[in-house]
Length: 388
Image 1 (cartoon, rainbow, N blue to C red):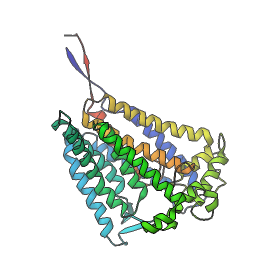
Image 2 (image 1 turned 90 degrees about the vertical axis):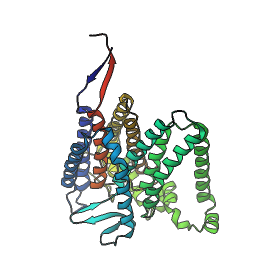
Image 3 (image 1 turned 90 degrees about the horizontal axis):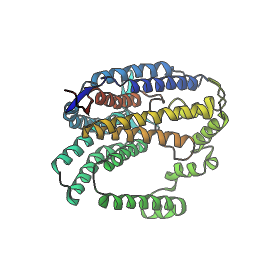
């Protein structure tokens, strides 16, 4: 007969991983501010935001799949409203950071809504995919195309609003979520393969024009050549060392100077702006070397592996979709952030999850972890048994 076995309601493996990431974040931020570069104590603030994150996890851990489904569309609508308010709000309330109007300036706190909208999109897409699969048990090309259309529309509206800020990094995260969840949505490759190939061809063509024929883009699309400075400085940073390539050259110098074991905690010789946030990995590379950087990357691999395991073990398709969406967010963030600090990807201003300083980013990440804790909290293991 089939018997149900209850497991521990708390995912202690995830607790341990988050504790290690918290320690790594605190050490890295302490090192980043030890040079006297900043007049604020970001370490204390980061610890505070971790405490807020724990409260967020505690508030949603008991929510089951039905409750999360009911909240999905409400959260999505709330996120859209916040992004719209950013556009119309005066700069005294919605301030610009590095040219992007992405933050609400509230009394004593700055809030970036897009960090939460990522999770809202995951919840909504998960519900739409599962309900579509339940409705269309026999799949056809038309039903699959309709699901792809719904996934695209749900992603398009917040993506359009974020691009108005403009925030390229977050826009790319939204696209990563859409792609990751499309892969597991059950849509036939007869539809996906031509679309993805067309996207690759289009991206390659644009890059070719940017590098070799920018005058065509300027003539026919009105794009100015200076707007591609970020790409040029990525491909040849030392030619733009005094301007757009400064961050990358300093990051490469910092990581390279750390060599194998690093210079030691608090010992930094390379000046690097934003070292407590977007370029925190450069601090790790300089002070802890290849070994320390490898340990940090391994922690992220362990986190992604654990969430993947949760996705494979759960029998609830809605939970599986949530896990895939969160994996897409974390994987893209880690790959893009580390990639930009070592020069293999353009700089986009994406923080390193759980490590970079940032209240909104950390709260968004902890909200995502709260969903994983919720999945494990309601997880039940089924097995076959001949007993009784």
